[in-house]
Every structure is written in C-alpha cells, then in structure tokens.
Length: 383
Image 1 (cartoon, rainbow, N blue to C red):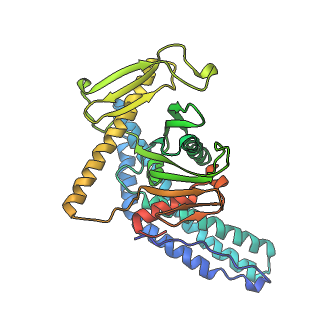
Image 2: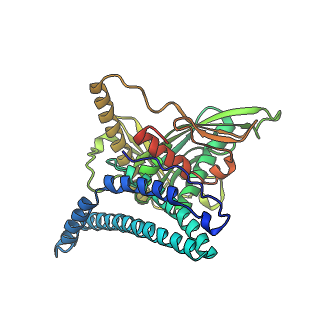
Image 3: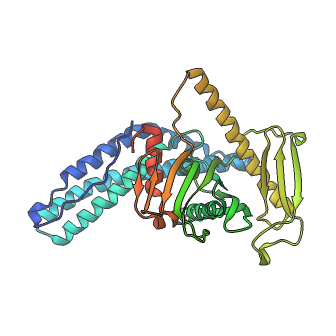
C-alpha cells in the first residue's frame, strides 16, 4: 500500500555546514520506492516492449480506433517509465549537489539543492497520486454535471460558482473542457450544467469530487444580509470509448428537439438545433445545445447518455458486490464538502478532513490538495 507523503519542511541554512537534507531525502526515497514497487517497473518494461511490437504491425491502422487506443497506451506507459527514471536520476544528483555545496561552501549550490528538493517532493507526490489511480475507468476523460439544490438563488449561484471552479481547475491543468449543456436560472446562476473534460485520468481525479457540496455565506440575495446555507450536487462519470458496449435500442429512447436557450444575444440559436434524449427504461435525460447543428448535438447527447448508462451499470454491479459481501459502512455521506465564507473563511472536505482557509482560491480552481487527499483517502483511508 503506497505510503503517504507528508509536506517536508526544509531547514533554514545558517551556514554551509548546516545543510543537511538527509532526513527529507530519505523520506522521499521511501515513498518513491513504494511507488516503484506498486508500478512494477519490470512488468512495465515488458508491457512497453509488447506494445512497441504491436504498433509495428503493418495492418495496425486498418482499425483506426484500435490503433489510436494502442498508441495512446504505449505513450502513457513510456511517459510513466520516463518519469520514474528521471526521479531516480534527480535524487542521485541531488545528493551529489549537497556534497558539493558543503565541501565548497557554495551558497548558490545550496540554494539550488533546496529548490530541487522541493521540486522533487512535488513530483513524487504527483506520481504517488497517479499510481493510486488504477481503477477500471480512472484513465478516462470525464463528464461532469452540476445541479443546484436547496437554497433558492443562493443555490443556483453556488452551482455556477462550482462550474467555474472546475473549469478553472481544468484550465490550470491544461485539460480541454467543453460545456455541452447549461440551464440558466430565472434569477442568478444556473439550474444545471454538463461539461466534458477530455484528458487522460480526468475521471480518476475528478471522481472524488462527486457528491453534495454545501455553501455557507452572507447571502447577496437577502435584503437583510442574513447568513444562508445552500447546496449543489456534483456528478462525475467516465467518458465512454468505442470499445465500450452499451446497447441502446431505438425503442428505448425518445428524442426531442428545441431552441437553445441562454442569457441572450448571439448565444441563443434561431433554429431548433438543441437535442434532448430520454432513456425510457431508466428515466435518464440528457440534452446538448452547444453545437449549431442538430446532428452534432444529437451525437454529443448520445455520448453523454452512453457514459451515464455505463456508470449506471457499474453502480449496479458495485451494489451487487456489496450486497454479497454483507453490511458495510458507507464511505460517502450526502454532504462531502463545506465552503464557509461567514462567519469565518474555510473550505473543508468532510471525508478527508483536508481544509484550507482561502475559499476564494478554491473557487478559482485551486483544488489539487483536495483531489490528492480524496484519492489517497479513497484508496488507503488516510490523507
């Protein structure tokens, strides 16, 4: 089981003889050794060798979808091996750099060593989180849906704040994001929104964000300025791939077309190009209105429907497994995170107990700490 990497505090350098980072380096090496063991580098080498042989097949691109999947898998595994090799080399070089700083009283070398230590600490922490993302669908892209809950205008405004938060996080990660559907509220904010984040491991990371979110603040929509509590729900499902088999008979769906809606201006279509698809057996409803073409919107809506049905099937399978295993304590409560802006400033995850005192930064997409803590908690029961 991967060890948890705690924040390392680098000692302040009073003079060159005081530069001793051996304890910090030992801790990083310990965590990294666990990562390498879980990754199983020899097995990884064999997988890369086999994939390299497979991509040499002259008939590979006869099936473009299979070829793309194969080359992507090879690229990911090669990148994973390269990162492991790089960390190993940099740790060795760091110890040499520290020896140089101490032996020659080189202040610039000492500064470089402490900076490299911090860089390696972050890199190993990121690698640790990625190592934990080994679920069946963790490597997939993600489809995120946000719905406002109880709380009136505050809830719809909160839902829009959450949408912006995840889009900002995606932007900072360099992940392409596309809003597929949005339903604006009559007052402030949105009733719901669905967007796709097309990046490897987006689902694995964002899946820990699923659940009920709570906001506590002095309401800007209340004339008396009273404190208001509001709620919003976040749903995260993996994007389907061509190899996924979800058979949807035409008789099981109803397709409606309508005119796209929006806050006004050019965002409102003048034709009935928006599409709503209802899956009759499950009651699942999806809609898409971001494209100008009705055909494109229908294709996007079907992709979202496929993803939700895939998640629905996975959830049913998990429920069956839990039933067969007997009673178990639920891991995820109805309320998983609180954003408190009054009478004090704090965002706290109620599962991991990870918290920060800067809600503005969190709403601006600073979610890495919460996501990393959530992934570790889900896999190991600790942060």
